Image: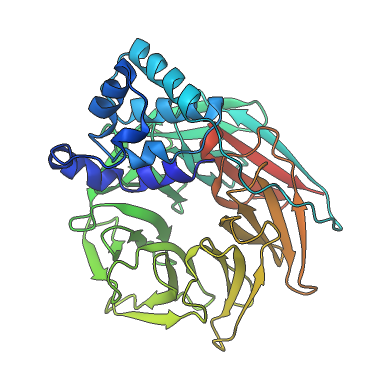
Amino acid sequence: MQKTLLAAVSVLSLALAVGASAQNKPDPNLDKFPAGPEKQLLVDACTQCHTLARVAFGNYNSDGWHNAMNMMMNAGAPLSPQQADQLTNYLIKNFPEKPIPPFKQVDGPVKVSIKEWVLPTAGSRPHDPLAAPDGSLWYTGHMGSLIGRLDPKTGKITEYKTKTPVSGPHGLTMDKDGNVWYTGNFKGHIGKLDVKTGQMTEYRTGAARDPHTPLFDKNGILWFTAQNSNMVGRLDPKTGAVKLAVSPTENSAPYAMVFDSKGKLWFSEWQAPKLATVDAETMEIKEYLLPNAGTRPRRIAIDQNDVIWISDYSRGYLGMYDTKTGATKEWPSPGGPRSQPYGITVLNGIVWYNEGSIKPNGLVRFDPKTEKFQTFPVLPSGGGTIRNMMPTADGKGLVLAESGVNRVGIATIQ
């Protein structure tokens, strides 16, 4: 359901800079939109940031179109509330939801229950979750330009607006002092939230104009990927100094990151069938080719044996890469080739991930020892694509950010 919006938002940081020139070119999808005043509203408001293909090939139900419109309004779409309602009703009428792959039930040995919380800012698009040591759940409001904190015990949600508006907070991590760091994906900076004072500090990332995923190493250096800039970078929080390295493969889209047990940084190249490492001192990047040319490794996770687990988004597979031996293996995801595996993590030796393009969204459990899957259609709201997940601090569940339905959740494993 959220496939097209994902594509639209992923290029927003670039489109904001080039949108004006794009408006001078005729859009080949214009004829797909029925005549009426809403058509001109659509052209005037939407093509400032993306082409009409993002709308014409969208796949939403009524709630999805409302959520998508709220996201675009948060990103600065020049519409009044009345115009936004008018345009939303037009899209609901003329672009109904298309069939998508159904959830496939696979029984197994465990039970999962999920509790969800609706977020205060409509269309905030929670992107990445973060499980804090105190049991709280932090999240990035990608389109709401905010950082949020949920106290699961009370249900209280606190939101912190970013210093720079429409900055597109994307990835999320925490330093040893409990401060929350995020990537300003639309505005080319790394942000730090002092959780004690609420103060925001920003660090510019230079040529890495769209920082994506952040991760601290054991020395307190913050590493980050920059997808559309095709870079990996490092930020020294003490000095603000940034060093960048360009991926050897053009347009490879560095994406997710993990550290192995020796402290080596690995990252996925989302638009190439490759994993890669980067040297902490020289910034030299070394790439590792995966067996299938069609593989597109989106998120990755690493287990206690330094095996990297891969959500192969394009092919509907779960893959593994042994960093010690170079051995690889893959398994078809239960939902099939169009299931779009996405957010992934490892908890107590078990691989968990989300199939983002099935209905309803659910979780997938994979036991590497038995090589058996189990699936859970347990998302009360239906899902909305879980773009990232991680274990809770107590190791009893997973924190989830469900961007397409404006919710965060905690999955408790029984």
